[in-house]
Length: 449
Image 1 (cartoon, helix red, strand yellow):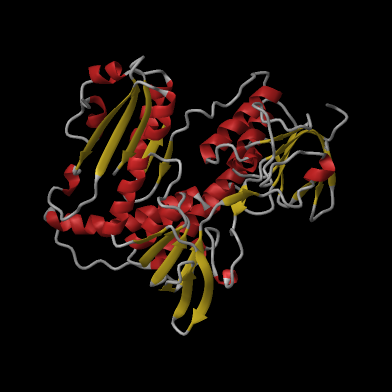
Image 2 (tube, rainbow, N blue to C red; image 1 turned 90 degrees about the vertical axis):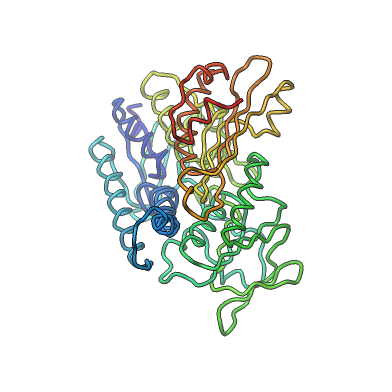
């Protein structure tokens, strides 16, 4: 590797790129990384972290109401949007500094500018114009919001990038989409008292999730006052004296203040020099890689959302770790994408691991479905209809638990731990032998009959 300036050059300092750079450097490699925006990537700056902070903020309204039923005498609470933004910005700045410090302490050279491929071993830094060569190049630039098909007035919309910087909390919002981001922000704004409507082109939200979980969440959202506008699309958008008017495909209109497009994300591969380096991409610009995260060019690799495999931060981190261990640590590793736990931080939240019931029935002819549906104990004194739904999928031929789904408070925390058991091949009998922890919602996992 001595003929190159570096052993590894990483393009993109998000979660996957940073992990790969640090681990490779710790294995003794000469490493540099380039980032044109914020260190920590989408998750830290425009995704998971600020979103979860907003979710916490949105849930306090219900907490205040429930507190009164438990004897707490509270003055009428008031929410201040600028305070949330200010504290969110401070936390994001702190986390970004941690990412930079960790890279520096690991001995990684940092370039705070855009890097572009010139060939299989050369990158050019766009601001300084400097060229660097590396034995290996790792692309970890993530994705960007996709606006979907063009329509009149599209320039009046925002995406998940801009929503964290709205100067004032809107009175009304129309969210377009039915995936993670749309669902989560509908719950956030409704919880903050905003008149919220969700527009989705399909009959149900969260395509690919368990059908019963999807429809139960939709019912819960309706009970919270969120207008669920399904089987419809946005045709045009125009300004009015009072805000914005959205005209839908069926001719109906929605008066609103903000329209937020959450119709998907695309790999951020434009003008990255992939053609110059001969890197193959898919129809949406995703970089094609094998199980070792290697592209068709042996010296160029890619991890994270830019590959459009499983677009979740922990997956990008694991892919970055496996790449660095394999290439620089003499510890060959691949990432198993078949059993990835995930959560939707709606309110109530969703946690899921393994196939949906619909998909599992196709895979396991003797599938057994166990479910528990109840009102959470926390709401015993409160006028709340928020549900708790838990489902366990078991292969009847082997008794092995193959999937679990939960809708309700703490769902994400439960699924993280269940994923360990399922990954180890736990059976229904294994869970049955476990003594329940009472009173808790999680005890249902070991008492289902």
